[in-house]
Image (cartoon, helix red, strand yellow):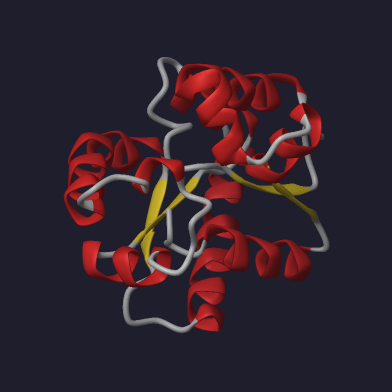
Length: 166
């Protein structure tokens, strides 16, 4: 969260001529509630089930860029499922950048805690090893959105070529 998935994903999709899909937006549309309301009424486990359902059957199999929430890939078997659907790119940022980028947004249920910085550190410690094994990794720290988009396009094209050879 707070690494630029949506902003960068939209631009990458536009450059590729693909459709952009955000799992959070699609889940909100499907369920008829905002993410914080889903977490409050149904819990994180149900939200993760909605994410899995979207990845399994909720989007086209090609021609799209999908922005997934940070907790999606850490679900059991999800890394393999995502990689079976296409190129996986994980965006990263430092704890300080994430705090700065998310501090103005109250739509983040996992950060509605007494110490958001400690929560971010905890989430990163638990998730980072999974992210590193899930796909290509790109840091967004100290880079403009256009710089990250260029890097992501190069990464996508290189990974897509490797997939075609298999």
